[in-house]
Amino acid sequence: MLIRKGYKFRLDPSTVQRADMVMFAGHNRAVWNKVLALTKDRLERKKPILWFHELNWNMVNFWKKSEEMSWLNDGS
Image 1 (tube, one colour):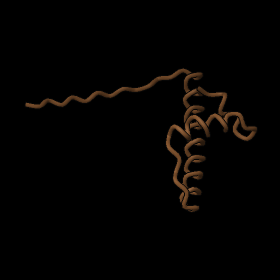
Image 2 (cartoon, one colour):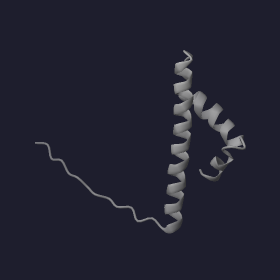
Image 3 (cartoon, helix red, strand yellow):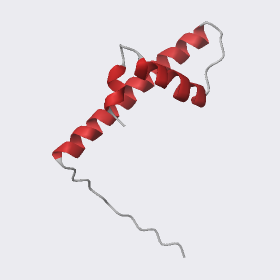
Image 4 (tube, one colour):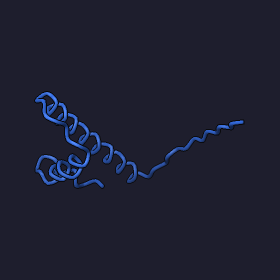
């Protein structure tokens, strides 16, 4: 007999933790949108898409050093 149990958890972050979570989500959303635009552009030009490690190490580090997206250094 299979018994399934469910649990509910609720986060109760402090004000500082809440701000960190919002900043983390914003950084992830910005990087995701930038990578999505880059991938769509490469597909339209019939070029191969970049692998995760190429995007993660090359592009994100490049974006962190750029003037336009230097705010990515503020997060983890």
